[in-house]
Image (spheres, rainbow, N blue to C red):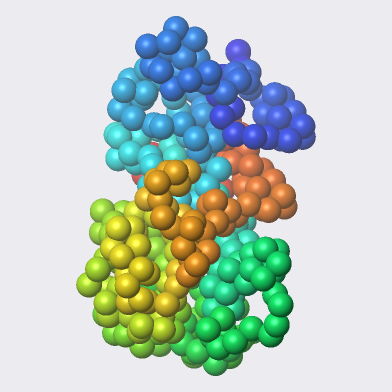
Length: 324
Ligand code: NAP
């Protein structure tokens, strides 16, 4: 008998056909109400789940006694209780590598857009305000030759740094759990403690995963350490920054600007001042959102799920210990 999977992710026809050849596919859950009979029925039958939208809790896992694999369509897994899965022998897979370059592109887009005030000035042109050449009050700041401080120097952090060092002649500093001597050699990057990096960098770009250690890593004290001309870019997770402290710092001119792809609460609440601030470029969490990359991410998740449920080693397991 075919194993059963819940397809929460958007899959193209080929990906769906690939899964259908091996498994019975149930549609996305109609709601996340664990008391709803159709939700309970689907969870009780599922051997696998593909997609990142499902809020995975102990209660959900209790309702899914046959679950063997959760195949996320994301590299970050901060929303998943990994230990609870491991304890139940459920494998978790994610999608590293295939989204690295696209997410780094998004980081650099935010860096350029904030430095050169692209959104602010394009809005100004659209509003018909361009009656004469702009004055110094609307000038941006240079990117080339400046200092780029990467907080988190893994796959995405290094890819952003490569753009800065090789494309824009930037000096790269990084703060990371472990040293990266190879990349230091390749890009002339230098490792710093976070405190020193914040003080020396013109652009501070966050690419750490969200963990207990990195939650609110950047708060009032850290923002105060940045240059008053400094720009903060966050393509990691919203909760890595204390958003209230950031809003305050942007309003008081403690730092120059921020380019944000991620927020404490997503979608942003109607009451957030961030989208309306001239010195903020806010994007709707589009780090990896290109057609090519989202297709590749879904394909990686399909491959992970298929391999894991047919007794083979998936490409990118998170909790390896389940396999042994
Ligand atoms: P990665 O290769 O695992 O890189 C993360 C880096 O952070 C690693 O080098 C790690 O150090 C370092 N790190 C972990 N905890 C740290 C801490 N407490 N202090 C300092 N450094 C720490 O992951 P990645 O593929 O680059 O992805 C990074 C994150 O980006 C994801 O977790 C996700 O949250 C976010 N992301 C966002 C988007 C988006 O749409 N905006 C898209 C993709 C990913 P070690 O090398 O020593 O382990």
